[in-house]
Length: 187
Figure 1 (cartoon, rainbow, N blue to C red):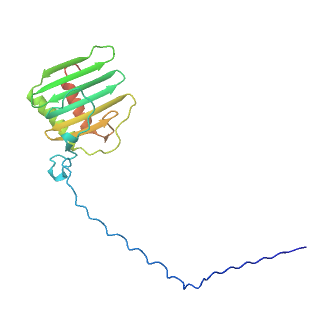
Figure 2 (figure 1 turned 120 degrees about the vertical axis):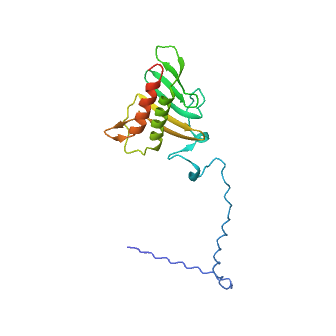
Figure 3 (figure 1 turned 60 degrees about the vertical axis):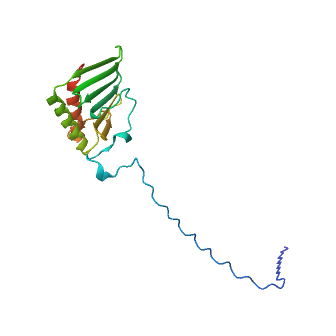
């Protein structure tokens, strides 16, 4: 049996004294950047309504019409088509744009008595102030969007559909939709 052990030791000094370890690098000072105010951000203290956003910042689908300065817009989609209700509280009118399957597109407008407009706006403001208290019901074939506009402030809620079940969800928003639907000319 043959066993081998080879040890090779090499040392090279070259007559140089050992170098000290490098000094740690000090971190660069943090640069202070002055905050630039964003002209589109409105401090919460300036908003009059709970859950409000600026109307200019409101994300809205292509409704095909301009939003009223003060009012409610309800957009619905389903298997049978889509419709848009626009309640304008400045002009006391409601407009219904419908694109329903098997029917020609319609655009109807009618005047609403001021007490009915006030009732609908009060219901919409209650929906605006409502805190969600659970999940809304869900369905795969319907979507409802609620927009409440008060000048430069707005509120937006979307649901599949907007509603409540056994006190959970958004009962005030569901009630606001009922009130606006009742005013519609073709419903």
